[in-house]
Length: 443
Image (tube, rainbow, N blue to C red; front, top):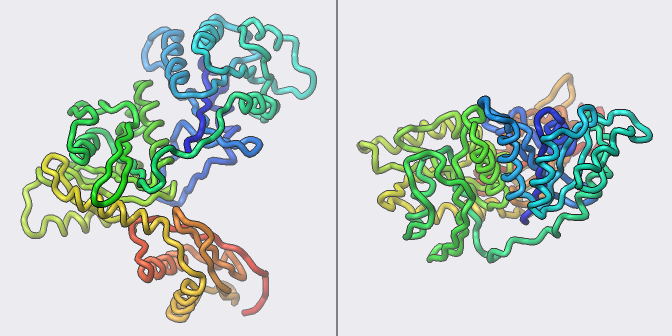
């Protein structure tokens, strides 16, 4: 599914980020106990009246120099216009209409994109203040009074947004094609790998980090099947992302992961694993995507008979937070093991989509609980009545238990390992959901 995009724009200090957080706060999933999970993204899914769309926050894009604020605002507004289906222009009731508001409003009108005017910081409930009517001067139609802190008025504003959103349509790609997002930090060879896969120069390759700005789709069909490879901009640490254009490139990279079936995480063999690699991989893990780690530039290393095994052991330790991920040692320059990469992509996609019969699952559960007894606390022992698979992509399992608090993380990890080993669930995260069937006092 390709979700429509709604961009939140406006001058600094009008409350764009507060509004953004209010609108997506209950929809944004943050897994605090999972290492490597990215939490500093600038977009999130928003749902209103059963409709989903991608909300983009431009609030974090502030001038890093003494440049005129208006020129910076023009740049980020133009970028927001390019990527969005609908624009929410946020203004401030307390400061009234400013010259910057007028300039941005004029740019938005010239774009021809639908604009919803949000007048923020109207924190009192009741009749809107007389100052609200000043905002009709922007020429954008009815201003919607909103309190981003309390959430007042956001419903009416979102009703207006929905009027302009296009219908969500399925991807036009062949259903049989595996959509693959090629992700990683800048300059690890993502574009070179795509070009090697295509057999032609489809994307620009440069040693300058950040050359790729957009997520570019490339259709491939070979003896391994049909694929759509999505080349993405390198994802840097937030502190490194100073350029406005690059912030939007990172956004598009994350959105590419969202619509992909498989994430190929490219790392540089000459550099090794870095903290930023864990951030990139963590996002794909959080989204439940099948994953493969492609160790690129393998040809550039001096090797002996132990090099690959030693490198693999180190990577297994580095990627301990997603121990299921397979590694493929490749070279975009020479084509080394590119065929193996295709095989692994197809393999992990199948594992991400696997469905296991309830009977087989409970056979494994019975064996595992006999082998290692469930934990107990204060005389009460965990009882797992049964388990079943409720969805795929990623495989998601529900356990029905007597007391959820007794189902400790360590025992969940033990059962996860048993399920992975029995059903060969390599390359995919799996999700456990715990449901209490009763609250008995049986010891």
